[in-house]
Image (tube, rainbow, N blue to C red; front, side):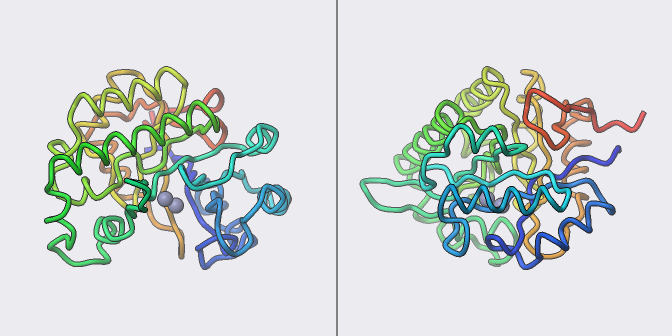
Length: 260
Ligand SMILES: [Zn+2]
Ligand SMILES: [Zn+2]
């Protein structure tokens, strides 16, 4: 497999433990960019903070993206969006009846930080709640694509539904097709996320059949994570031909994962 560009990495500018300077050094080991959370309470609160981060990281030679928190982040000025190499848009929570429904426990479970069984399984077994999560999640992705101009949908199926254990059952095929169609129509890439191990194989196969672009993301917060699981997911889904983003926004710099 060729060295895939890793778009999704955090630094001390948000919740990572490695400085931008040290992230810039590891580019020599493996091609990667930087994509800190926006917003983040320490240092990524305003558009001015994002522009300073962009300058600092670009000066170190990094490709610079952000992980834009869909439904939470302030509107991103078009000029800032255009100045970044790419924007990842991710859902980490939704709002239901005016209350926050966080994906934190599900995320920790999918990352293997909470042992099985998934502690919220009972609550999210409710079909009506599942339906509402699906619709709210997709609405946030749509808004990110149409209004913010995101380039990559980060961990597209990370949610309490994925943590239930059978994503092909939890995400109706029709919902998967709507998400994929949105991405195809707007040239937005679908992220394969190493840390959460999403999306699942059938989703990747469907997306590939529709000709979607993919983006690889380790979602490293500490030491650079290997991309072993990502590479296995790519092989198993038969999507070596990609195309995969190469560190710039969707319309440029695509490649395949095959080394031949
Ligand atoms: Zn995320
Ligand atoms: Zn992240």
